[in-house]
Length: 254
Image (cartoon, rainbow, N blue to C red):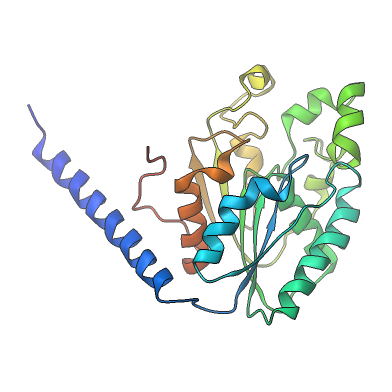
């Protein structure tokens, strides 16, 4: 027996989602909405190429974008944040940026938090963090003392534990409108035994939370490729525009 009320709700939801996406596309085709700049930061052991889809979509929606490699395996979180976020901010300002936003993956979010501990961005916009280890990573807890992990993950890799004295847990609240997207589908099942609750294979859903965040969204994606997912990119664009995530569209479209 078909539930008519269920069908009505389904079609209403689908129609609303279509309207939201159609409006967003129309706005993008109308030209750049502003001179806003987005600093895009990849995660530990990754490169700017891993954020290429996000960069492309941001550019198509009228944003200036700074998405560059930084040597995540060669230095501490403090050194990386001070040198490379400063560079990104300077490039945005040279481009005549209105507001300066951030979109980060994994450790990139910790770099932003570190940078804003002692630096002020007068035109700070919104911050979207994808799978950030805001309270550390359980994987780091178990692997940090292994010689292979030490040699490959570098100084920053040692700073990402869940211990109270770890870098993420010592950082003070930061300003800005912050949206956090956490994954709940593991991309690394061999690490599953390290977690007690939902996780993306590298970071638990609970660890991704941040006290000062404005909105929080959980999606069924893994840590490694969360930044490439269509629904995640749509949510990034929506948050940069509205300061919150969309509850109309399905979180995991096929």
